[in-house]
Image (cartoon, rainbow, N blue to C red; front, side):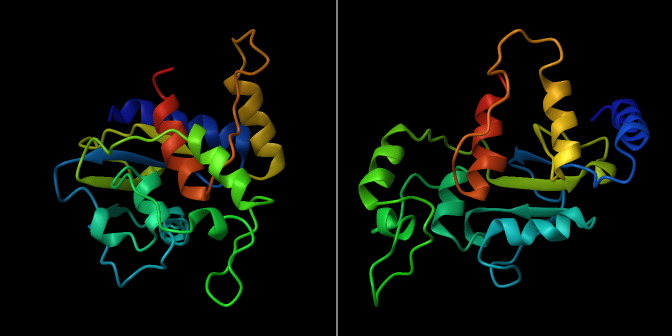
Length: 191
């Protein structure tokens, strides 16, 4: 990471977004030692819950074994499969057997959505999450994730399409948290 870019961003962020939380970044690597390795027993089942620690300044590294959620493993690129009954899990569940998240109206709708869902294979054994100010010269962040209040989000959307004509230059695709902060932006980074 070019530390001049890191410092310049930090200065501009503080100037224009005042006390807004700094973004967190992630990148894939095959090298150990870039951040504290997450033990599968030490974090909540969901990756999103574990990222609260990153937002508070702790850098974390995950591999396939440290992610407890099958969806998290898929959306971070560590597996291709999805749990049996996923269409019920994402919709209304199966009474007495599987709690539904109620993200979608029906299992049939989930099946149609999943036909269109992108997939990818993680390009490294590890995914490293660090808050912007914790980045070091040896880091190579690929995506920045902004947890933002509406006014900050509005500013980010405006700046992101500042030099674009396309009204759809900004996307907010449907998906679980791990897909919207890892999979989609990772796949979009080169578009």
